[in-house]
Image (cartoon, rainbow, N blue to C red):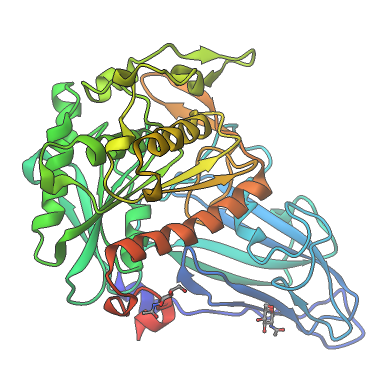
Length: 455
Ligand SMILES: *[C@@H]1O[C@H](CO)[C@@H](O)[C@H](O)[C@H]1NC(C)=O
Ligand SMILES: *[C@@H]1O[C@H](CO)[C@@H](O)[C@H](O)[C@H]1NC(C)=O
């Protein structure tokens, strides 16, 4: 994929604007950096247009599944004929106000798309490509049928230059290890996603781009389960932990665990109970998760813990599965036993999982047990369940394929959810660095930008 880096260079298209006949005028559009990490901000500039001109800045992305997503904002050029999307307000469109990254976080499926779509990158070795274009006037539809004044293709990468991707199949694991650039050794992270299963690599790739060796693990739908029909147990997760630990480029005593949703249940369980002392993470991050699960058991017991409920529109209300939070100690992880720092990231409008109620109960349990000094809770008003890396679009609902396909509700309001993603990601990286490195100086790479890493 290094060839790709060399081949594709940033381009600016200059199209004479015929409709602005009097002056010989060319619209200049630039996006900097035009190639960056997914969580890097970019600056979109439109220059050389007639002062006061109304224009629409538009983003178009075609997913790997073929579906197209778009976002746009309405702007008015200033007295010098410029628009700076990082400083100027959008007057309408899919976002409004000064929103430097609104062109990404407000992406929605183009009109006419089927409902319930979700954007997920499966091949992290290629970038997410977004075409940023400028159109004359304040447009709201029909972008495909019009000629843009200018356009730029922007690449958003999960893997920074030099990050290595290593598929792992030993011990029957379905996993992928991402190693940061450089000789290491690096601290490690075991990265677990939620109830949909699949081997999702994009978050682990991004963590490796920030200096942490990260192992993405499929614990719900791994090869071994698909072949035998049997769900994996604690030993499977412990084996994955050991793969990280025994890797020559990973610091064996500096390993963290991070889980979202169901992955958070697994993380809490391992952090509190693992019999293998060495399989205790030095810190844990739980995003939109819960400690409610039968203590004796693993996934099967957890998934059978309650009955799914539906609302009037036939949307699943998974959060009801675990509510009310039980008082019986055998039905929840005893977080009072935790000996490592724990970061909880919670959306207060999570319609999928009772993450907020669980966080409050965990806080109380830890206060009673005297280990609440280890707890940090990041709780976000009007944020939903899927708190992902920054600028990921917000999904209110999408078709979830578990045993059967259901329309699942995730909750959250787009702007608040996007703010939460940005803030939570930054604080998660700080939390991991603080706990995984004795000193910041140990990790000179963690603050480098994509461009600096390329050099
Ligand atoms: C655009 O706005 C950003 C953020 O305020 C600023 O750093 C940058 O210098 C501006 N660019 C121009 C050309 O005005
Ligand atoms: C990286 O950034 C963090 C937060 O901004 C800072 O605390 C840390 O010292 C920086 N590390 C290095 C090596 O510059």
